[in-house]
Structure formats: structure tokens, C-alpha cells
Image (cartoon, rainbow, N blue to C red; front, side):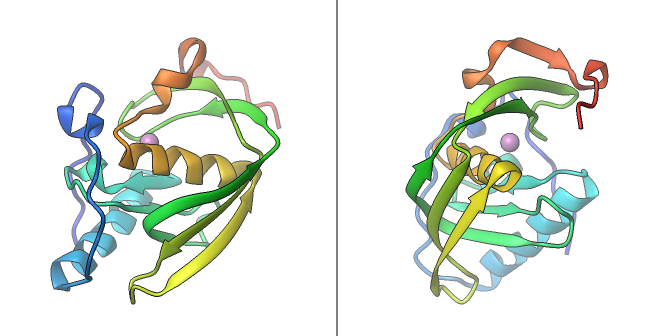
Length: 159
Ligand code: NI
């Protein structure tokens, strides 16, 4: 396992569409391990492969620190409701922005055995899942921010 270098906004790799994963090999498993390690080390709640320079449809999420989720070739099946809240991204260090997202999302994705599974998420998890899937399409949350970016350290904790 290794910590990988996180690419930052302005790096063209973050604006490319990622390729579907066809098979899992040793390199893919190593990438997945490294993505989890890199996300935890950076205190993030999600990380997508293009953020470490790999244009594959792989993302990891963990909104509690105890619920690691691996999404390979994720597809959104259903969304409901909406939530507005501040969000950030490891590729946009120190910044946050107000983004409206669905409050519920249902996805399908593959696990590391390439078995298809479905997952439902609400609130923070729904937000993180949508955020990471957008990375795989070459989009960053800053494109959706309402009212501009703010410094994360200036945000007052609301709850
Ligand atoms: Ni991000």
C-alpha cells in the first residue's frame, strides 16, 4: 500500500471521462488499496481514481470512517429529494462551497470481485456518492457551487 499524490484543480486529468473497468487484476487491487489509504490519510470522505491520475471508473467513499465503500463502474439508478450544504474536495484544498444534491441516491456498482451490488444512501452518503461519480465524468463540484467558494476554515459549524 502506498499514499498516492492527489491531483489538484487545474490538472487536466481531473476533467477527463474515465474508462470502464473490464477486469480486476493485481494492479487494480493495488490501486484500490492505495485509494483508501490516500483518502484516510488526507481526512477525506471520498476519492475517485482520476484524483490520483488514473482514468478508470473507480471511487471510494467512507463518510463515517468505519464504512468503506468501493464503487467500480458505478451508475446512478434513482435519486430523490434535495439537500443543500457545504462540500469540499481533496483536489480543491482548503475550499468549500454550497452545493445542492439529491437527498437520496440508489446506485449499482461492482465490488472488487466484480460482483454487481446495489446501494442506497441518504444525506452525507448521497452527497459523497454523487460527488465521486461526477469525478468519473470529469467534473468537479466547483462547477455547481452556489455563491462562490469560501475558505473551509471560515465556515461555522452548524451542527
Ligand atoms: Ni472530490
